[in-house]
Length: 144
Image 1: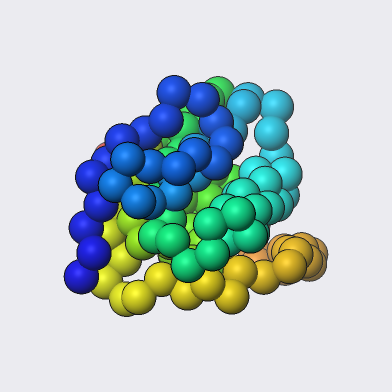
Image 2: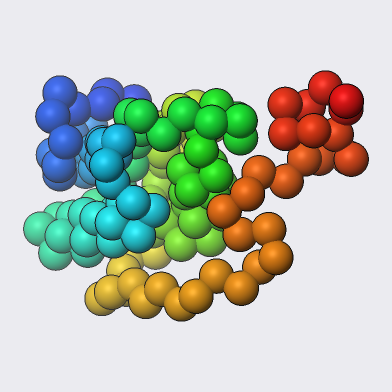
């Protein structure tokens, strides 16, 4: 299994790494929506594959201004670093480093068939946009 050296770039974008990897660095700003950040992430993946076909990709993420009760993030950017990352982005990278998870290595080979675009449908989950407590506790986790 390929394990890259983590070396986050100084500026957002796509950068050729010193260890023959492609570093993708995304910074989510306070005014960015989930949809805008998700679209940008997939656009970065697609551009990285076009510029450096088949090279191992390492995804770095910083999130500013989306503070909340879900692991320190608002519901959208907790979901971004959990469900969206693991179901959409993770198959197309070799490793990642995010505020919520720290460093991760993909145990499967990186896929290179990056999708052309994302489509967003209406979120019909009853708890959409809310922090749902685990095990009957409150969003702060104190059970009160």
